[in-house]
Image 1 (cartoon, rainbow, N blue to C red):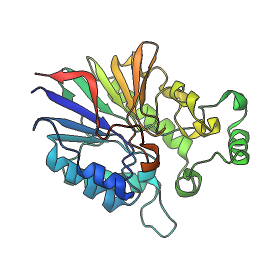
Image 2 (cartoon, rainbow, N blue to C red):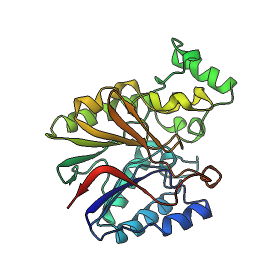
Image 3 (cartoon, helix red, strand yellow):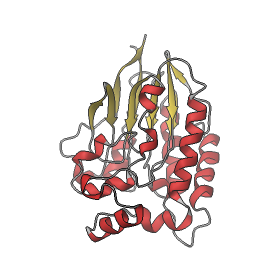
Image 4 (tube, helix red, strand yellow):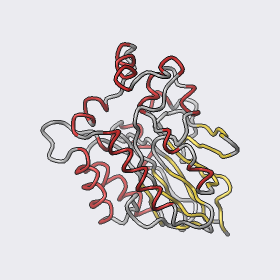
Length: 267
């Protein structure tokens, strides 16, 4: 059987039903790889334990963080950048690839785990042209904000960190030759957010700075989560695949498995 590169995100294993589904995830072949594109859980030890268990089953596990891994409370020791650095250190110890590690190659495709965050530049039409502060205020009025405003934003300048992460990712990707698979928790383009029930939430869903990544870096596809709308759409000819597992109440019509990415099988 050919090796398969499996992709999934938004495991949210603090929900018992999700934890049971993740415990059932198994490779079809011992050589299969697994990508987990963020939002495993909120607690650092749960994130590490979950990914370590998956690493014992799959030949390789590649992780990039979502917003939930960055959530912190005032009493916690690690917040913001320190929290991310702590996760990277612990996951390296259990053999999980992170966005700070060399990009692995699956067949002839470089799998680039990115961590680019968001900068409030994804705007629905109703908020187009507003300064960030006004756009955020409008989202608050619409009751369309994320917990990020309480559990990430107090501890780090998110737009500044986003700009740094985009520049860091560009520098690394500029050194890659050949096709890539771009993996990020947040979509790289705004189009996947156009179907959100609360369009104001797009503010927390990505950055326009990554708009050209798929063409600039010869992407065969871009994988993301965050939106909890598992589907594939094509933007300028490139597949953008939302691989979110999501919360149990969202899964009535979702298949109970991870998603194999089409076209990335090698004999």
